[in-house]
Structures are given as C-alpha cells and as structure tokens.
Length: 226
Image 1 (cartoon, rainbow, N blue to C red):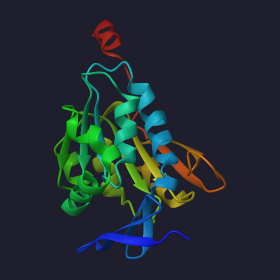
Image 2: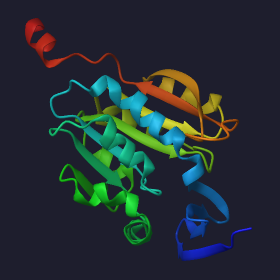
Image 3: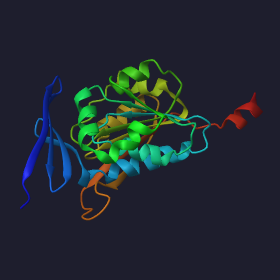
C-alpha cells in the first residue's frame, strides 16, 4: 500500500485543516472529515456545468465560487463559461488553502493565470451583501457537512442574484429543511442526484439543489418590453 503523507496542516477558526497525499492523489480534510478529494470531485464539475449552462449567452456573467477547496469547482466554472466577458470571484476566507493549492496543485494553474478570476479572502455571503442584483450564479459545496443556511442567509443570496440567477448547492444527501428555507426566501428549487466521482466507482451520490431567482430575461427581450 502506498504511504499516506500529510503535506500541510493549519488550525483556523473553522478547525484543523489538513492536506494529505497518497499515490499522487490529494485529499483536503477539516477536523478529520474529508472536504474534497480528487476522487470525489466529479460532482463539482457537473454542478458547474448545470448551473452555468443557462448563462452561456449572458453578456458579462458574474459567478461567485464559495470556497476554493482543491480548485475543482472553480476550474469547472472556467470551462463552463469560456467567454472572455465572464468574471469569476473565488471566495476563500482561509488564506492557507490558497497557498496550499499554489504549492501542491499544479492543475490549478489556470486559476492564477486567467485574468477573469479574482481571489477574495472573505466568505461568499459577505461578498454577496455588496453585490445586490448583479450576480448570475453562486456555487456552494457542502458535501462534508450539513448546510446550516438560515432564512436570512438565503435572502442575502437571493438579493445578490440577477433575475434568473442560480444558487447551486452541492450536498452529501438530500435536505428537505434546506429546500424549505430556500423556497421561503423566494427561490424556485429543483433537486437532482450526481455521481461524486467522475471516473471509476460511481456508487457514491451527491445531491444538487438548484435554486433559481425567477426567470432569466435576456437583454434584448427586456429592451422590447421597455
């Protein structure tokens, strides 16, 4: 068996973060629980594709990725919206995680080289408070913990989104409480199951909640109605 090597560790207000490697594969843990690994990153790519495909024709779509993790969600977002006018904000308050990705994740190099990407060292929720009605999509991953979103938090995300904008939340399993909170905040929700792994064994499923703020109205259609 290949040895398990701890590459990094750092204690923050969230808990103890650790980055481990075995046979070239990376796993990020928080207080001993896996947050994301290379084997369970497939659902992040599919979340980005499903959430951002409706924004493909938007002139200058703005996407917020909540949490860097090992970079898979952010990389998938770049791939899903290749147009030059798109903008991506990666909200990662734990600065150590950014440094670890730079040091150990060579595959993340597009994130540092793409001029459309900005890295913000604060939580996505705080960024959304200052982006009222300007965001096209928000991507959240909570597969390592329960998503304890409050009604006030959900309303903050709702108000940050443009009409037709999407809040995408990836979960370890279905959460009826969360769906209820989102609907009470004004979202129209749909739920689907995604394989956690992109390749190999696909028995582990994650739950994707897509919460939409109304219907997306293209600019040309808005002009016709005015």
